[in-house]
Length: 359
Image 1 (cartoon, rainbow, N blue to C red):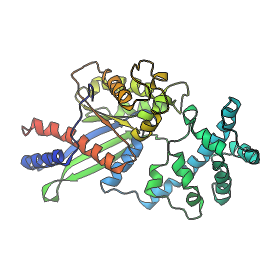
Image 2 (image 1 turned 120 degrees about the vertical axis):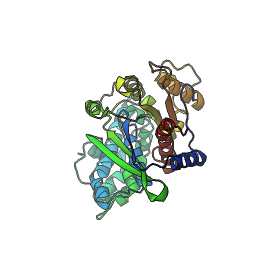
Image 3 (image 1 turned 60 degrees about the horizontal axis):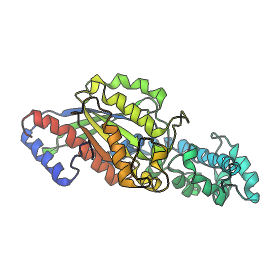
Image 4 (image 1 turned 90 degrees about the vertical axis):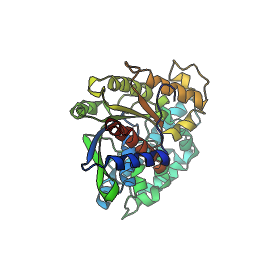
């Protein structure tokens, strides 16, 4: 992976860790503190939700119900954005204008408030507009405006979501967006022999928007690893909070700041380049060189693009000897998230085993 190290993510590596832990025969619990950092819209909160589910901490019905207003708000915001930009893009000469029959409906939805209810009546209106070819073509220009990555999933499930008595599923929760504010942590307790807890991982997730980053400093002490998440698909998008700033450039600048902080000189650095599924499709349609000017590889070429992005992050270290463990990820894929967590665990635990003389 260029200048970055990749860690084994297979069962053999995990089994070796288990054997070494048995040799250590810990009578105490080992606790590890991990920070989950990244710019907004990187997918780190989605990643943490999946980690919870995979490690036996499913979301309660109460927690799922708490997501209901945000899911419906996501639908309203997304359809409103399409209604607005359908007209804007059409005025620029794009083939995004809705049919004459739907023009009055488009205008109505363009003015809708995201605090308005979303029930059966709204579903009928939204479904009618979503079926318009002009609206669907507008979505092809999603890099020009702010709309959540999972809009198609939400539109496909609008009818169910609009129904009285609707209870969100975990899949609905995964495909929803709620801007992270404050500090959230999840504790994972992993058991060793005799079914005793031998490892405790406390993962902190802090909001990635610029206004939230000042809260990060409170967590910097005694950090075993920083997990930085960047959205590969953000190479042609701008920030929600600043439509003048490229998402990928923001992630690179933030990573440079974090990786070179004195507080983290002894912490493991793990880089997850996320949303690979979206990136794979985007790179076929958009020139990376149009957005990242230093790219000299082949446009529309996945391998060249990935290698350049990996090297761009790795080059930001002031200390070239500091290892960055890099992974290409998709936070909505449970198998991928499990492999990521196992790899992360191997990196952190192996350091303690090494200090104890076992590796």
